[in-house]
Image (cartoon, rainbow, N blue to C red):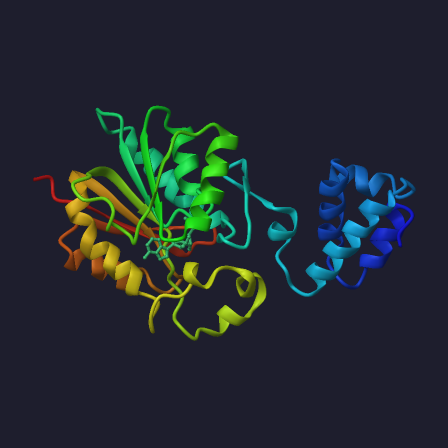
Length: 276
Ligand SMILES: C[S@@+](CC[C@H](N)C(=O)[O-])C[C@H]1O[C@@H](n2cnc3c(N)ncnc32)[C@H](O)[C@@H]1O
């Protein structure tokens, strides 16, 4: 087993990227990656060395770093994650920015629904960024809702969590914003068998032969749950923007458009429910 940090980093060389080895050691030792790099002679207690060896082995087999560490940053905050939830992605932060930019035009405190909340990344972030906003978050996975509730508690966010098949448990409720990062990968897409995605919950990822089944359901059902002038915003795949704009237009939304993520990809499409 590894006696010191330097031994552990040497064992990781060629198996996982050095930056990931430093990150794993930093979390295990509660110190920064800079300190890991600066003090290779620092001793490792046998229990910590064994934990690092376990993480190294699992990472070398492809297990995502976020699941090994149990956390992932989203919009500047740390969210707990387990294999019951999708690992929040940076591109999903675009939805937060779109809601924040549009909420300034409202005269009222917004009511916001997050469909398929997973770790709670969107709902918890919006609750914290828009103090007073009424946040409802649903997921069909009770396990995911458990993770999301723990994140809301840990970060001090007020969110109402509901187990529901999309809108099924929300009769009569109306929102100013409905946001969603639903499953949108095509069944059988080879990406489902690659990288981190192999370890993520299948129910968070795939959605019919073109990946559009859930996007279509949400677009069709959302109008009954929006106030006049309310927005529906949905994340989708890199090549689905045109199809999603078509779904929104067919459902009767106005002002249909898409926004690009930091990579320049049309990543979120949205529409405004008719003013009355
Ligand atoms: C792509 S993940 C998004 C998780 C989180 N919003 C994020 O952006 O990191 C999709 C989520 O939708 C949930 N989901 C899938 N089908 C659903 C359904 N019919 N009703 C409610 N939630 C559903 C999954 O359990 C999963 O948590």
